[in-house]
Image 1 (cartoon, rainbow, N blue to C red):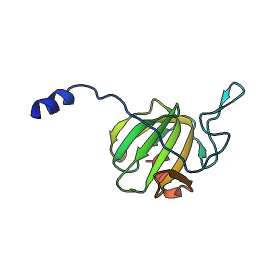
Image 2 (cartoon, one colour):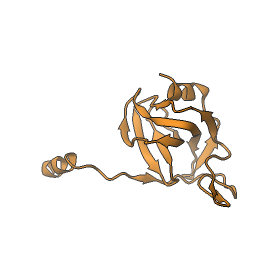
Image 3 (cartoon, rainbow, N blue to C red):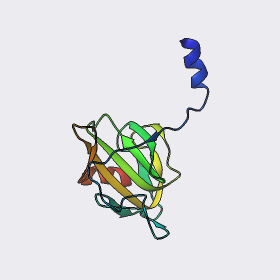
Image 4 (cartoon, rainbow, N blue to C red):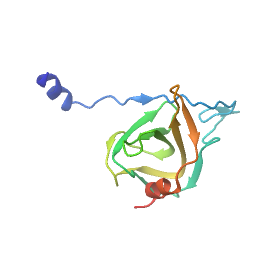
Length: 138
């Protein structure tokens, strides 16, 4: 067991991709295309003009790549019933993160808050202004 832990600690772990089943379903969704253009935001997303500014981690947690290209899923034990989808990041980082870490930069940040439902899906909910403020200012 100790040998297995030591050997994995020295190697880069593969990045996991998290698929998030959304309770609500619309014809036009994030990641879909209209003509030759990709939809970068949708119902439930808040889009913030960042102008290349940094996006910060508000609480210790974990960031995973999302199955939607260019999006990440952030989760934290400080807000256990929720996950947060962030799209539009340039060079987002994945793995364990600490409060105050830079997640990446963005020209436009598309942010969605999702609450876990009893059947295992996630419902889009209105995000907290305080949470957003912690993510875009240090």
